[in-house]
Length: 127
Image (cartoon, rainbow, N blue to C red; front, side, top):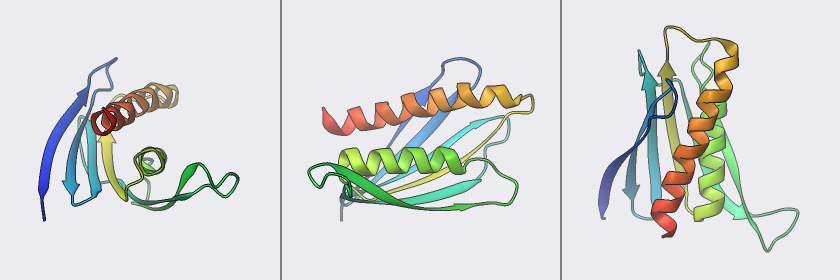
């Protein structure tokens, strides 16, 4: 089995993120971290499937586990579901980020970087 890994970084705004992408056969394992105290906060497993609304399109089914009190579930669900559907691969995303100074309104800025990071990963495999 062939395994290879690489790191991508998004450094827009103060909420920089990094991702280690490991290719395991046809599947991807993505670890996302950032902030002052990176950790494991949530994990998602997404399996690609045909859309229930339109079988000509791809979608994905996602299962999420989140450590009590952590908020990374939205990060791992979004990224794994998007990439599984668009790349037609099984995707695991693990994420943990913590900033000592963080307001609830900063969630939007983090998700903007998560979205850009997911696009960077998608582009890497579709170009």
